[in-house]
Image (cartoon, rainbow, N blue to C red):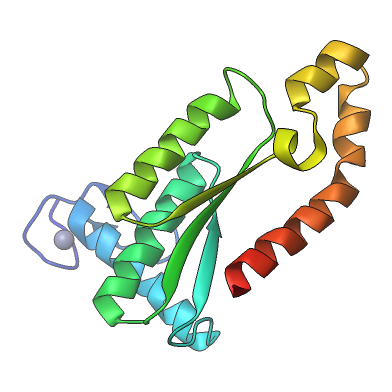
Length: 161
Ligand SMILES: [Zn+2]
């Protein structure tokens, strides 16, 4: 079955939104163009703005970085992108995903700032778990929500500077 958009390449996916069968290239194009249209409809960006992308190293933020960076180049939004990551200090989890964020930084040439619990609060999540045990960890993780508001303010002031 051929792609119903380009009528050339083999269709690989039937979009649930439109029920149209599309090839890989046409799917990517449609995906990016719909995001671009939403950005325009919402008047999301203004030229010269600094825009921070919260990057976890997971697939969602990696796709977000790719799409915003691609559209900024394609449509000349004129925004300055930053990557912002939080390092909770969980060995074997966050350090691995931070490697992915660092790769995103290199791949897209976007500056990265990492804010760590250790630097901000003096404790990493691993140190907290050592002290209180895994059982009480969630309660403490929740109590970090208030400090996270401060963290958001720090990030916001960083982006304004
Ligand atoms: Zn196609």
